Length: 109
Length: 115
Image (tube, rainbow over all chains, first blue to last red; front, side, top):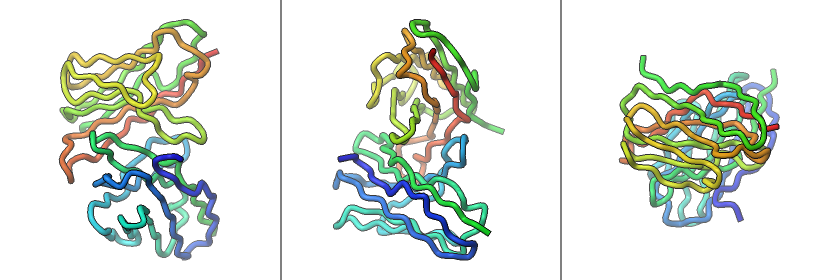
């Protein structure tokens, strides 16, 4: 089993829709989690950090459920510019990042 | 502006050759990392460094080496390139390991093809 698992998608949604991605992890000792965004053929960039039960940043909400060992990312009022691959990441006890394979989102007009 | 750069951006080489990929950051970050990204695997850690003269093996370190002689640079060397090392390589750096300061900033990547 992969340490961080994501549905690869693609999720194909219309502009203005709300879309949610889930990510499960296998190591209950993980303390820090992140969502990175990666555009095609570009480098990953940090979207959100998730340190406690969750946090919100504009249209984006991340939630952490430690009991069930999953993290979610909710995107409200999707924009065309949200089309990208979203990488779920956990930090291990040695401060190394463990990446999921990513979930691809396509927002259509 | 401070930044992280990688060179070359694209490289084609032959099996058995030694290849070095450069990574340079101007943020004065202590921590630097090398990842490779392949379809279906996401980003996997090759080597990392938490300071000058410190280097550590990551998940997929076989066939790779790094050295850290100064804060700004962490070159990645493929000792004898193999076709299985065809990939996109990303370098990253972070200021600290402390919560709130451990965001990793990524370079633009190097696309390596081994024929």
